[in-house]
Length: 599
Picture 1 (spheres, helix red, strand yellow):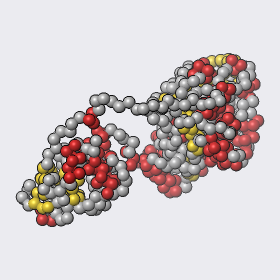
Picture 2 (picture 1 turned 90 degrees about the vertical axis):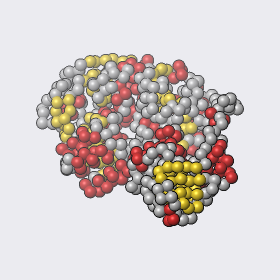
Picture 3 (picture 1 turned 90 degrees about the horizontal axis):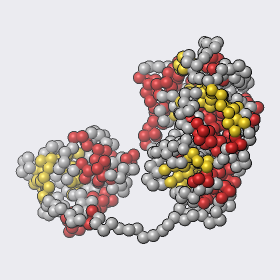
Picture 4 (picture 1 turned 180 degrees about the vertical axis):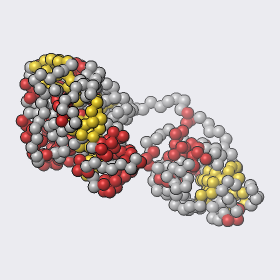
């Protein structure tokens, strides 16, 4: 049998398996991340499932290890509470990437099995173990039953001859494989890789290469464990084990031979991991930012390579370099060896360990038009932000960060490339210069009476939506964090007027807390008082905000029709004809209002 066939058979009731067999596989380590973890919990609770073995079941918070995203923070806390109740281990936001922790913490070793909500769980092929990324239902089933069904894949034997040329590292190696096989030649295969140069590869090198099996479409890429890997895993696991190797007469669907001596340093061009070219082919392409980290290149050897190139130098002016070690252990090694100091002196941002740019929850994202060179494993459009991303080795990324453009270590210029500077050209017929439409001096509309004080800007427009810049999209999030009014945007009608209590709009300076009302067509807010910044924001947006001393005289109820005279400062309840004085527009407020806004 092949490696995967041996591992699957040893973790099932079958003495022998072959491609196409569907087998229940016992899982040694069962992991849910902060991405997907909450849904795993939901499945467990919805179907009233138990936990097969708490000692083999755990959470890893590696997608958003800064806890900076509110939705991730909610999911993380939900998982923590569930873990406390079930006695499960949580590798929290300071721990690092889950697939690395499985090896470093001794949960998985050669011949073992693991599943995770991480599509790169097949990184465990680096130690000769079986790892698979799976969806929330699969993971919940593994937690409950301790096993999942799996279809035995066919195997490919990849024989690598020759030695790698100088300057060609593990990341270059796998980018050469992607150039050879593309995104689907190995689709659905278990790949075993052999050769003298393979035997000499370190654990870190193997992790880099195995981590990109997914980008080649492979189920997993196995490295037969060498002595270094076996000793490392025995020390971490604290137990003995028998590594698994393929039989001499194992049957492979394909046997492919490649010559490593022909490999060269490569980069993947933006958009497709398999669209790789020699670094020389893209040398000179200007970059805005650089990223070193991810499950592919966040190990200590990667950090050392980057530090060697960056030491005593500065990142090119205007270029942002972000560095994220894979685990807390790697981070601490960087600290002990002075690598963090080297990174900071070079001008890099160093974050706590985690997935970073590959996941949307940490540093490494880029914006529209931004060009990034990254050590990540994916550069699909939108994966690492709204810009474009080159994939490269840590050496190439560090060199490019110093140069200000894509280059390799041998071709770092004495002076970095600079961004062109000039005067911004103004559009001759800007929409904002058009004359504002005449504004009504008397507002008429249905009122919402919200009898609450201190409604702050997070209640009006929560900070999880602050990345929205299109005012047309803002309205649907209005009051969705105000208890009892979460459906306000669905019930509100254009022309409505809000009447509320003291200190409306306290808190943040966000303009969106005004613009969301404009987006919905709300005509005005009448309050006993306003937060100072909120009042300015509203006035500048030509959105009427008015204050009152006492509204008892008008007997205002939710849904009543009201009329507001901005000049005279009168609020009238059209239902009963009663009126009361409010503070009229000031001269400045009226001027800005009639102008259609501050601009």
